[in-house]
Amino acid sequence: MIKPLVTVCLENDVKGFSVTDCQLESLRQKCPCVDIKRVVSDTELESIIDITDFIVTWKFKESWYRKAVNLRAIATPAAGNDWIAIDRNYPVPVINGTFHGAIMAESLLGMILFFNRRFDRLLENKSRHIYDRNILSPVNMLGREHVVIIGYGSIGRYAAKVLKTFNCRVTGVKRNISCVDKGSADSIISFNNLHEVLGDADHVVAILPNDKSTDDILTADHFVSMKRSAYFYNLGRGNCCREQTLVDALKKGHIAGAALDVFETEPLPDNSELWTIPSVFIMPHASAICRQYLDLYFDELAGKINAMYSID
Image (cartoon, rainbow, N blue to C red; front, side, top):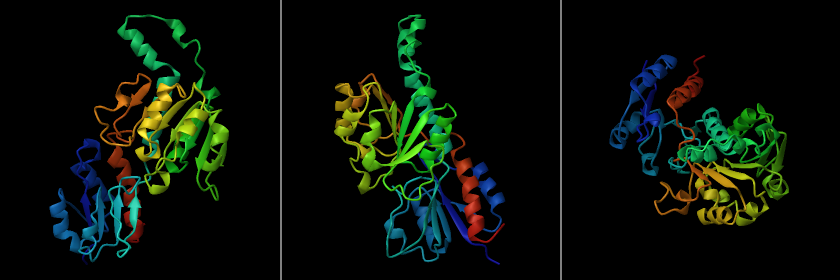
């Protein structure tokens, strides 16, 4: 009996996003019901796409659908479909990774503690050989603060769970609040009511997807509504807020600072003012990167492959 062919094309400039032989062998052992083949280029993928049943990839071109006559599904580690073209004439399901929350929650927690425990000031004092114990006297415990998470999906829920271990008050914000999994949040509100909580928030976190409905969804008015002591974090996509809007809010003192993992233009241009604003912490779209990234993904993927091919 010929096994279904699962083609894996996971090569990337980021080492943590590139599959290793050990990871691929682990997937083979977990999925004996299929034949797993690794390819390392678009050309190699195209050469066998007509006999492939299931593709695991970072990107998929629209033109490939016509050739992929046996394709049952496309799987991608990414949380969003930024690199997977959709052709409605070929309704092949796209299976996204949902494992990112555990990694990204660590990044978010690090960012929040960086500001809350004044690590930026401590690093500055170290460079100047200043030993000032009083620098932390004004800070609040994280457990006394309010975190608002805009885009309360699976990643937001995981972040809320981590933050609740510090006793933070967490408000989740969604555009559609019907049938919402509240998770660990204290409350869930509609995006239309965001202004009602911004003035009380100490940390405002955006974890929004990249689609037309989220373009510029955060405006200058939102930053004006925030406390001047509050911090803004973006770990979703850079389209939710124009860079100049954020720069203006920082320069005018509407917010105390920002930690940014994603940007309107990536890579962040060398002439961006964000590089030079002292109260901005920059991460290069890396909040989910770690050595175990594909290990976590393959654990999840194996279950989906086995379920598709009826293996317990």
